[in-house]
Length: 285
Image (cartoon, rainbow, N blue to C red; front, side, top):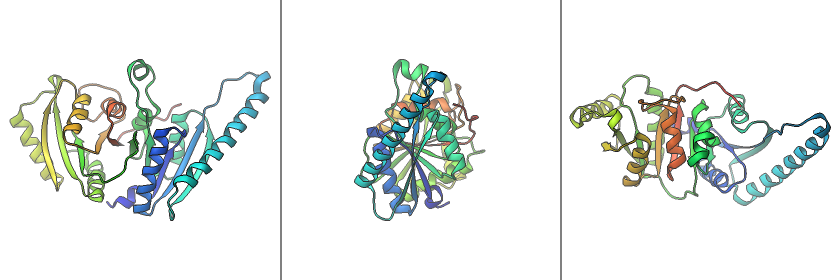
């Protein structure tokens, strides 16, 4: 699998915040190198209205649409790189569902999305739009927070080390690794609820690397009280610019490849986070 297969059409959901502008700038760099194109999407959430307020609300929505289109023009004129095709769309609806519908309808290959992250009560009760899309997107999602400039030398790849049903994920991760010329750091995070001996885990790591013919890699065991925080801490120690994770897009405990851990990492890591959901949940608002 070539990186161009993953980057032909890049979707950048955009609310014109600093993280979404950072995501656009990073997507421009990717598209320049891979000769891909970028689709910008701004979603205006529809208010709940009654009949008497309908005309007023329609006028307001059209005003917001015009404002978004003006913002698209300003942003693309400021940052656009020559040779990269950039289109923009304004749609109405819930952010998550509208974005996922756009992915399905427009043959998107990768989503590059800015995120502030979420913490505290907001994370517990609501969560970020980024984590919802990570949980349900049928294509890879790359989360960007801060403006990223420079090469990617180290990619952390947390994994449950199962040898089945990972071929597609591994091929995508290897493609990204080769594209950036990065070292891949495969890591098993040993937690009290998911504990295995180092001897046994080392054998599994070696078998995993052999099974998938990994190159330019390290094999690591990292002890930490929780899996999600362990991944974030290990990425800091490894000086990783990117964390690559597979998910099954569902809530749950006790399994590495599940949505909850990936979503927590998206919320709390400052590094780039690339995710690929191998089994998505139904699209919902």
